[in-house]
Image (cartoon, rainbow, N blue to C red; front, side, top):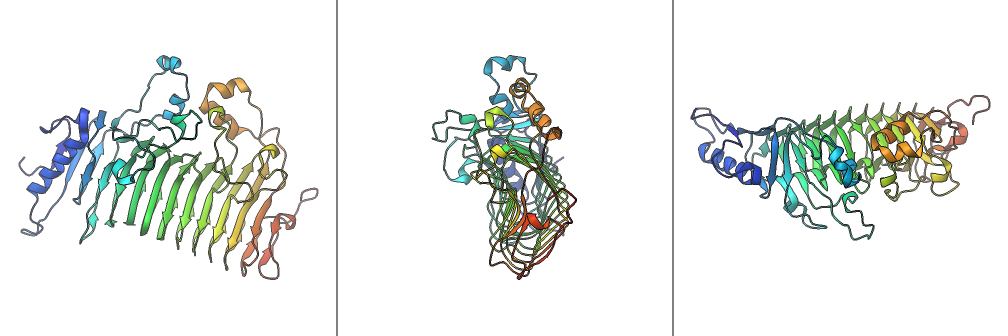
Length: 454
C-alpha cells in the first residue's frame, strides 16, 4: 500500500542489514521524512512508522540517528544470554556450549571500542532533536543490542572482558522528550546501556539489561517516569539505575542483581518512589541518595547484600567499606519504611576489619522517617564446595543465595544518624544497642530486645 509505513529491514532495497543495519534504518527514516512532510493536512499529520527487525544477527557500523516522533523499532526477541559466563569459560570448552552468542533480533555494535571517548560517538542509537514540540513517542521493543567485547582498562590485570569499558552505548537520547518507551529489550556488554537526558513520561519496562558497565542513566532532569519489571545488573564500576534532578520517578518491581557499584543512585531527586523491588548486591552503597534528595519513599523492598562468590570476579569491588551504609541518605523528609534488609557477610570480609557494618546511614538532613525495617545480619552459609564454585557461575550464586544453614549473627549498626542531623524519627528499626543517634535532636523508639539477643 502506498500509505503503509511498516518497514522490514530485510526487504528494504537500500543497504544490507546483516553487514550494516545502521545504514538501512537511517535510509528508512529518510524515506519516512520524505513521505511525511506536512504537519497538518485535513487534520492529519506525521504518523511516524514501524521498523521491524526479524530474528537474526545484524552488524551496525553506522550510528542510527532518530529525529522523528512516533517511530517504533521492534524485533522478534531480546535474545539475551550471558557473555560474562562465556568469556570466563575456557575457550576450549566453547564447543560444548549450546549457544555461543546472544540471539533473537540481535544488533552487533561494531562501532570502534574506545576508553574515555565521547559517549555519543559510541552509541548504536542516538535520538536527537531540538525545538518544539519535544520529540515524542519513540519506542524500542524486543531486540538485543550487544556491545560484543570489553577492552583493556590499562590496569594491567590482563582481564579485558571483565573491565566493563568499551565506550559503547545502546540508546543515547540527547534532548528533552515525551512518552518514550523501552520495552522487552536486551542490552549486554555495553559500557552504557541506556542514557537519557531530560525525560518526561518515560517508561522503561520488562527489559533485560545486564553485564553492562551502567544499565539505566537518567541525566539532566526529568519527571513523571517509571522503571518497572526489569531484570538489571551492572558492573562493579557503574550504576544499575541512576537518576539526577528528577521528580516523580517510580522504581517498582525490578529484580536487580550484582555487580553494580550502586543499585539505585539518586542525585538531587525528590518526591520519587523505590518500592517493592528485589535488590541483590555484592558491595555497600546499594541505595544512595546524594545531595538534596527530599520526600522520597523507600518501602517494601528486599535488599540482600552479600559477598561475591564466583572466583573470576572476586578481585573486583566498588571501593566502599562497610561503614558507608547499605542505604545511605543525604536530604530531608525521606521515608524508609518496611524494608527487609539482609547483610550476609563473614567477619573476615568486613572492612574496616573489626567494625560493625552500617545498614542505614543518614549522613545529613532533617525530618527523615525510618520505621519498621527488618534487618538480618548473619555470616555466610558455607555449604558449597570449591568444585561446584569452579564449575558454574549459576550454581555458585544460587547456592550462596540459598545458604541459610551454618550461620551465626554478626554485630551491625542498624541505623546511624550522623551528627548535625536533627528532627529525624527512627522507629522499630533496630535495638537500642544497634542505633546510633543524638536522642536530644532526634526521636527514637527501639525494637524490643529478646532475651539473650542484643
